[in-house]
Image 1 (cartoon, one colour):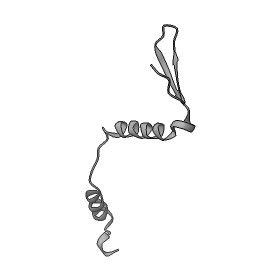
Image 2: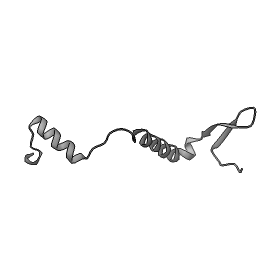
Image 3: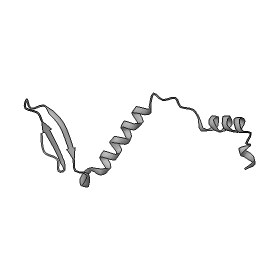
Length: 69
């Protein structure tokens, strides 16, 4: 496997890859995108709802007519 600038692969005694270290000067955007992707996957199982439904529920609960604001 060819080397990639700014990426270091650390291996254990048996030769298995155990860590990958990225130089953020060269790969900051990739790391940020990857961490964002992981956060999205973690939130995938959380309940979701439409914005309009949330506004209607809050308007109903607090007696605020958003249309009149």
